[in-house]
Length: 213
Image (cartoon, rainbow, N blue to C red):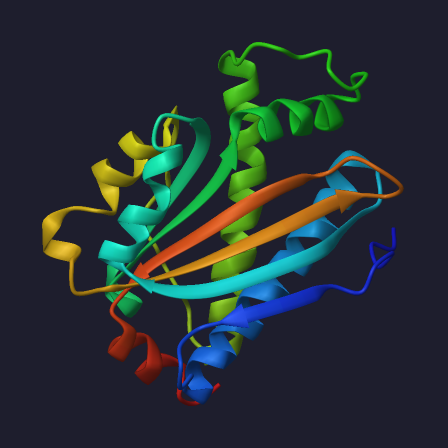
């Protein structure tokens, strides 16, 4: 199944003087989302494509401020801890309304049929987040030429503020960099969902790892 209906738009704002290694990370994120869309096409038997991918880098404090307005919104989350490779925590987030719409697509239901989040919905969206996580990990491994073994992912359905505060925005992380990537994965000819990837990392270590990419 071909999931190339639209050329993907990439808008990257990584810093005032982006290092080549950080730009390589932007390319890595975009490639991972494209591969995830292809896997979702197989899973759903519907044509899925990445319409848009925006990437930006912020300090932890700026990121905290940026998510305050949405802190009480519920989301499906999957957290990967990659401390051995690049001292990073990675989160895949899908908002509740987006997840319910996606679940109907996964199950072949009419749009709007699922209105309540239950254990089946959490499990179904968890599988999507697993696909997103595995494509991200595999893309890193392919580019750096070594195996990547994160810890077992932690999945949750909770308020955004609780998810981030519990695993990513603790005070000891204040000196790290937050890389945010928002991707719109769209079904052809309509529908789709948005996923947010958040990488909380040690930027200097990330640069060293990607220097050879």
